[in-house]
Image 1 (cartoon, rainbow, N blue to C red):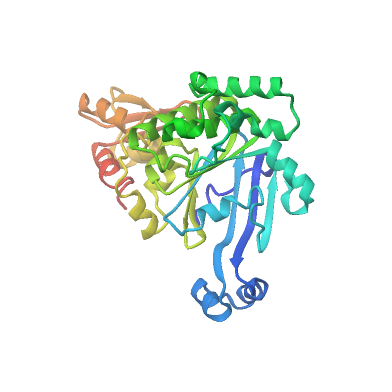
Image 2 (cartoon, rainbow, N blue to C red):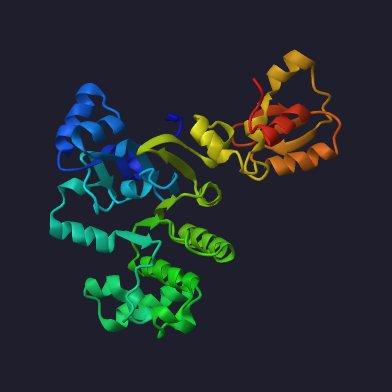
Amino acid sequence: MDGASNTTDAGSAVIDLQGVWKIFGARQDEAMAAIRARGLTKPQVLEAFNCVVGVADASFQVRRGEIFCIMGLSGSGKSTLVRHVNRLLTPTAGSVVVSGTDMMALSDADLLTVRNEHIAMVFQNFGLMPHRSVRDNVAMPLEIRGWSQYARWRAAEEALALVDLSEWTDKFAHELSGGMQQRVGLARAIAADAEVLLMDEPFSALDPLIRRQLQEEFMRLASQMNKTTLFITHDLEEAVRIGDRIAIMKDGVIVQTGTPEQIIMNPADAYVMDFVSGISRINLIRAHSLARPKAEFERAHGALSGTEAIVSGNDTLRQVIVKAADSTGPILVRDEDLGTEGVITKNDILNGVILGTEEP
């Protein structure tokens, strides 16, 4: 696992999973003990105990207001993992803490309260009640809380306005398109005003245009409302586009965690490398990632002339390319936040486009 970005300050973490295992099967406790004692692999556990390892020793934290994406191929364990956050699944081992609350210590009644008031989940299949109007679908969590009809309808209508569905409040789910139904699911999560959003491949069943529109809408709303979001997807481009950080899973294991830029520039293994091979880097990689320290450059190549084109450390590779097109020499990179300077050569730019990182 990429250790540089897989943890954060525990005090700022809203979601905190540590050492989570999920083993399915009647002999799961025996299997867990054997894994700890003998280091059995997933195939060995299946053969010896007829148990399936769904999640293996997963740890991560999600900061307040962060969109944290978990991605992987079908069967990688990502949906299984996210269902531990609201305890739809109970881990075989490990801890799950949400907003300082140990989810394993909750009574059934307290767990229902947490699910209804603090953690909202948006599913791929929308989860709408066909006999209820759009308004009543959105207001359902508030109805469960015992809100008056006036109060819950008002909150539902405000949420529907945010997702541009005000004119559809009295319609039924079957009267709406797939994209509109997904908007209703998102509005329901907004109306619940939960601190944590769990999004399990919410847009994967939609056509590309509607999917992109909803991605943009979701990012806008998540930023506006400062929601802490765990977003599950099998699509790296979607994860790169909306995620502040990404965890990539394979066979129940988190194989790498980091920012989109870190994962694309420094894939942990061949599995991750295969994922990132088709991603365009020019709008993702930042100048500071390509730059070498100014002092190091000058030791090797002599002092800079002072007439070099200048870019910010946070400028994208595309912006660096535009600057380089009008310059014959290296590019000076200034990171105002850190007060440092670096240098990018034309070869560095080419390596950034082709390889995503500098050559050894």
